[in-house]
Length: 168
Image: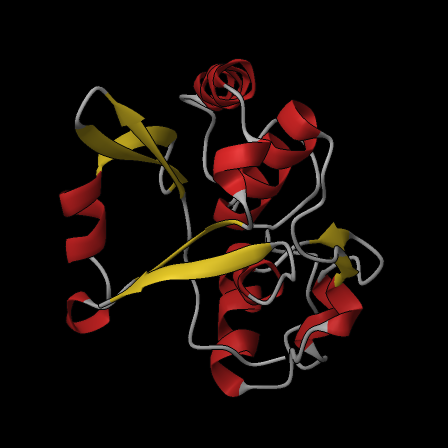
């Protein structure tokens, strides 16, 4: 699966100010404008749960914020493993929805389901995995657990549970 979407976060409000919980470096809360300025050419898309006004109560929103804060400071996961020790962007958002609302936004996949054949992908795999896990002359996919569960920004973007509310 190839997608133009490579990063994501979860928007929330603190009074009138918008912030994004994201996993980039450590998990942190980033001001919305700062977050959107990092988009390619300043582009971004905002989606929300369908019928969110009638679905999300103040209690559920508070729960989502509390769970997001609970991940704060966790290191970024460059290996895309399904654990809570390190977190990558779509994993963070998926887990917040699952833990707070018991819904799965986007279909989890296995690493093997992704297109790992691109040269840039191969280079990243070799760079991120420790020496000794990859044979220098072997395929990069030998370095990773192809059965590892994963969630991609594209899978979440395409979820039937979300609707687009803004595109810049």
